[in-house]
Length: 183
Image (cartoon, rainbow, N blue to C red; front, side, top):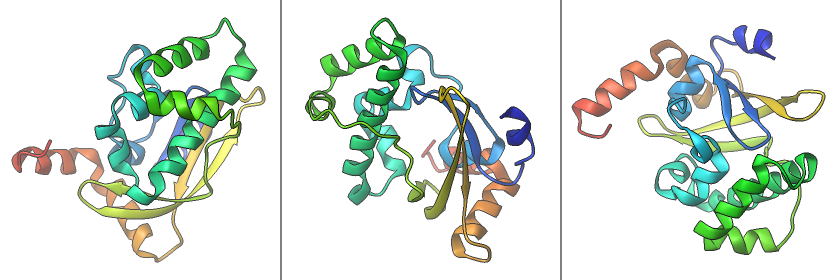
């Protein structure tokens, strides 16, 4: 998967684990999602951050889509737990999330299972606003990792925004945001 990711220099792409941990992300993905390499422990998991740090994680999604995203996060974690068993990091993640998030606990009790990746989604970039993308996913044979590639229709407004992210990267935007006191 790394060989494929390396060829996607102008398209946001990232490799994530079954627990929602970003293992590698290219420059356009860093510009779109932010650099998540500084997280450690359970905070490496997007699922954990979604429920424990909603003020930062959920701002990337429109408000009307957050309930679906919450359900998808929980259902995906349930699938990961089923695949890895009771003595896995998934169990630790479920235990901590149940303790720290009533929302997670309620959704966990519903026992939904599925992969969380929607084919079409709207993401919110702090400087460029809403960007509609299509998400293609390639799984490893054992389903423990996934390569996510985000694209937009050619010549669309979203494609222009993704091109801008690929050219300017996260450095330009984070510098502007710091100057404005936003970063």
